[in-house]
Amino acid sequence: MYLYLTIVVVVIGILSLIGTLLVGRKVNRTVEEYKKLENRTEEELKRSHEYETKSVRLNVKVLTLIYGFTFLITIIALALYFRFR
Image 1 (cartoon, rainbow, N blue to C red):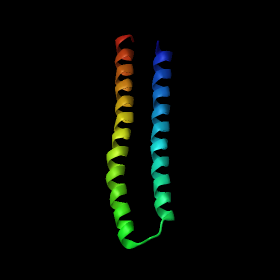
Image 2: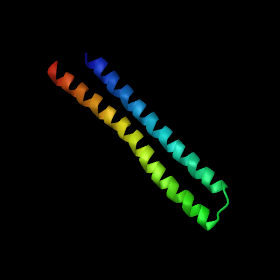
Image 3: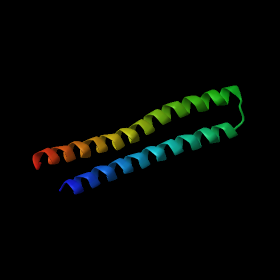
């Protein structure tokens, strides 16, 4: 039983790490795209504002889901561990 719980928690942790890295890569790609564009002040300000609003809205939601799911699975695994100990 403990082996299965450990495996589940480790797999969920690894999946969370992978999800976080994917979100980070997406942000890096967006920043690189913005760096390639011309740097007119008005356009740069518009892109910056658009990036900040979209990035916060989307990436925070995705990361909240990832870590919320990880936290829930970990709590369930701990409850099972203490129940059947």
